[in-house]
Structures are given as C-alpha cells and as structure tokens.
Length: 233
Image (cartoon, rainbow, N blue to C red):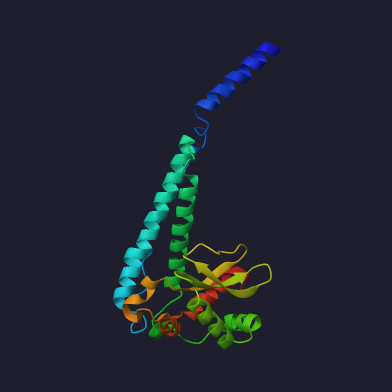
C-alpha cells in the first residue's frame, strides 16, 4: 500500500465512524431494570412505632417513584449514548443520582427494621457493639449522636451510619435529600429516613418523637451483618 492509498483508507474509516460514533458499542448495552423490593414484613408490623398507612404509602408510592425515576434516567442516558446527543446529560445525571440514592437507601431502610417480636429494638450483637464502642465510646453515645444528626437534618434527608473501610471506623453523616453531601470512601450500614413522608401521618412535625420511637424497630442483627460484610467476619 502506497502513501496515497493509506491516507485514503484512513479518511474512509474516519468518515464511517463519524456517521455513527456510538454504533459500535452503545447500542448493544441495555440499561438495567430496577424493581421495587417487597417488604420483609406486613405494612402494620412496625406498629405502634410506625403506622401501617405511612409504611404503605412510603413503600408503594414513594419508593416506587424512586425506582421509576431511576429506570427513566438510566434509559435516557442510554439513548444519549446511542445518539451521541448529550445536551441533557446534566439533567439526567442528577435524576439518576437522586432516584438511585432513594432506591438504595430505602432498600436498606426496610431491611434494617423489624417488629420487636422478631428482633427489632433488641440488644446490639457483640461484634457491632464492640465497633460502636471503639468508634463512639459507648452504644449510648452513638445513639445520642445519631439521634441528634437525624433531628438536625435541614429539610429532607437521612442520618446514616457508615463504615470507613480505610480504617474500619464507624462514622455518622447526614445526607440532604438522598444524595447531596454523600461522601466518598464510606459505605452506609444503617440509616434513618427523616423525610416528612416517613413520619408525618403519625408524628406531624414532631420529628424528635419519631426518632425516639424508631429505635424500637432497629434490626441490629441485620445492621451487624451489613457491617461484617464490609470489614470481614
């Protein structure tokens, strides 16, 4: 092949790619389809601490909306990759973060609660108890800080207990909505939802009363399992 043929071949290849720059790979990648996980207990199982109607609306309406929003955002991002049109990338990226955070945190939230008859509000298991004492001084000090963080969330959001894998410490952080202020390098293992839809039907604006009642349904065995899956058993 002489120089002229080489240049012509290169130009032809460039032109072919320019027609559809995403056609080689993006069209073959389909977005994941997320679904609403079932509750591990009936809607009325956390009475009297969290009422059945709140649980039904929270799970079937609010969590479902996050699932639907995440599926929509990921589908739109897939379309953008296929077309090469990223004009709305900022909008759909924010929607994916907001709804993805809602889906993840609510899925964890349902699992780290249980009726008192089935482990909710019981004693903190040994490995988790030791970690809480190591990080906060005592279980009581942890609960006081966690409650204060939840009460102090501005507007809507979460108080979250994280594991920091770099040193194994437990830390408490807040999240505005369910994605703002989210830190890097930590993994949440427990969270309390303080969006008003989580408590308003029963507690109205008495967030502190809801937080105090919520400790009666924390499923500590599940929280410890979350912890051990990160730090090792």
